[in-house]
Structures are given as C-alpha cells and as structure tokens.
Length: 201
Image (cartoon, rainbow, N blue to C red; front, side, top):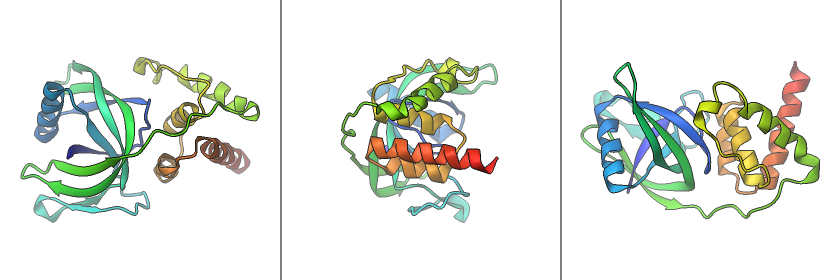
C-alpha cells in the first residue's frame, strides 16, 4: 500500500514538480515517507476530466474521483516557505495501476498498486526532432527553470513525457498520454494535438 496524493495535474516518470504541503494528513505523509525513504503516488483528480475512475468518499459525504493510473514519486528536495507551508520537490519514478483503495480517519487515501514496467526505450525519430526543439524552448521558461529538469533529448519516452507535462493541454489529454505505453505513438499524438491547436487559432 502506498499513500495517494490527488493532484489536478499529471506527472510522468522522470518529471519534476513542486507541491506545497499544509494539510495535516499530507504533512504526516511527507514526514513518514522521508523517514522511511519511500515514495507516494500522485494521481490525477480533476472534476473537469472524464475519468473512468474509482470514487473516494470522505467525511461529510464529500466525494471526488481519481484516475486509475498514476505515478510513484520520490521527494528530492524540501523547503519551508515564508508563508509557513512546506514546499517539496517530487520526481516521478514509475507508473502504476490502482488495484484497491482505502481511506483513513484523517482522510488520507492509500492504494494497493501494481507497478507498470518502464516503456521500451526508443530514440526520437528524425521527423520528430522539431518536438525536441520545442521542449528545449519550453524548458527555458522562467517558471520551469527552478525545477532543474535534467532533459533527456534522445529518448522518446522522456521527450514525450516532458512535453505532455509542460504544454497547455487538457488534463484529459495528459492522462490519456500517461496511460499510453508506446513512446513513439505518444509523440505522434502530441504532434497531432499541436497541429489541431495551430489550426484552431
């Protein structure tokens, strides 16, 4: 069982993001994970996404949905912010599928998960090198640089993952790309999505 952190975003293996932690259940989760040197799961929770997902019922009969696929993450850095909140930097390690869920008294969700094997490594095809250039441009943005991303510009899975995380697509699309296990097909889908956006402008 691993702790589950619902997030209105999608993170891929190799990706990084910041999380500001302030709820007691998640502060306790982070403390336990750091003490045991273990990770936790990040899963998309988005009321606007069409998730074929399990439903979690919390106290007060509040309910929300999370995706069935997520990413196991590790904490790579932390900082206490001036607002008193704990900011952690997490990095995606592996994709997983949720088999079962449970919820504690403090409403921390834990999941029984199965880890999904890493995607078969494949180089970015020559006709997709423009996507590599786009990724390099996006990574230079002032809001992205603090993450300290270590870009792998050769592997299709890493280029595709970073593009999905950084491009302003819907969470539905991002989740669909996470669940896709073919890195070359993912690049095709990203390219098609970019073309559709250009044509709609």
